[in-house]
Length: 316
Image (cartoon, rainbow, N blue to C red; front, side, top):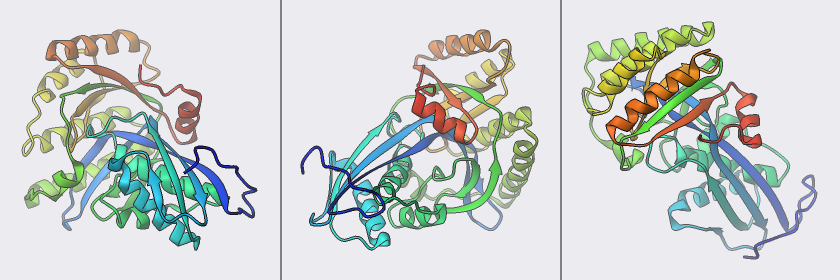
């Protein structure tokens, strides 16, 4: 494939067309569990870094090429997007991501969503989120990163459960326990959840939905911490207890974790007047644990996209 192809007018793309797409990651999950009806769900926490995709279409191409074999799932979803648009041929997919893989930041889901959006952009259109979900459903379980707001998402079914909305800006001091987790394999493992715990997850989801609607960051943090503690019953996290203690010391909002990843984080309101002191305290505690700490940002809706485009969402 040539490295540069001419773009044509998006209204009537010719044999060549170029499109770009993006998708933000999520810092783990504010809440993840199983509901009384046996449906597995998670609640996203979008962050201002993610993946970008460029798709160069050719109507005479035999398939989709990608720069790395590990991105073949993205090539598959591009083929599904072309099929949905009724377009023959294929092309070249280029992906760039700020999200490390296997950490619980939705790197794979962000690649897939960005790829679908790039195909649509090449033809001057867009897919509704339910169509994006349907395409990803054919590829793998997915986070709800096709939605800009905080959502409760049925990740094994790749379906929206409910929209929770937006929160004021947040800062997350993230800590990485190291290694990688294959999310697809992890989510296939048997993990029985008793009826009492399922009822608690349902209550936590209701509580979180109300907190997001009210902009109640303290309750959001409390729910995130409780979710982390419940999940630790089946997947112990060595850094969880020390970070909960550090969060209390710094008067943080709570601890959020990647339930099927390696990162944990302490939440703070971005407008906290003592933010610098508090984040420094958490980073010092992370250093004692022996792993790296990184600052991530949550911004509501279109502000997150703007921050990502302008570079304001870079990891510090």
